[in-house]
Image (cartoon, rainbow, N blue to C red):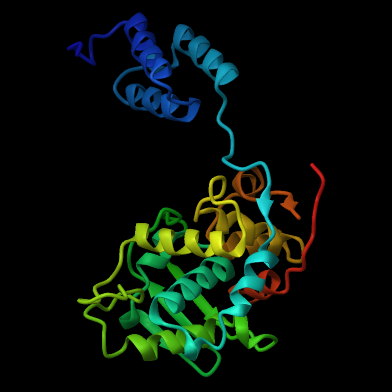
Length: 280
């Protein structure tokens, strides 16, 4: 390891460090983050030599979205319809169905679903509202608070997240040892990690017929947002799923589909999704 004083460093040393990152397989985004860290200590991160190097990195290994197309939400919804009624599902299947529906109807990450807490939940006759106290990736000084609403979908009880949630709460009430919404189906029934939630979602996608060698659990975010954007105002999608910039949504999440704003409207747009194929 080279021991270089960050306050007495040359532009050649900076380029050498960034070049090592490139040779180790890092992409433009990661290398640019390292450059930004260097720039916080001195101005070499923006010197002409480093800027030319970064342009070369971008040309050779540009930052690209993970997916160029996304799966059709209706495929997964059709599978979830077969997991009915919720009262007859075992706890592992009910857990997987609920977290997948939550991911689809809210457009939120596993990080957000992982911190849902029943002590910060308010249930009415037609919806459950979770007030998130934990700082999330989408939070900022301009967007500090997070609320996730799971509303009833009366048009089809088989894919109603509110019905599924009520059944899950009833089933888990005597088992849980944690206030976290999602708990392990095995004793001692502690709260699960976000990686466990991602595994449940990925398993559900696989059982639905989605190619999970390509699409991970996080792809529910893009699939739901793309489906909702076909029938909803983009500002609705941004607000419901926690994006602050339309450009971020357009670049990373609004994908072509292969084969008075509220989260309830977002959810209905997703759940009403019909099978649709778009040629690329």
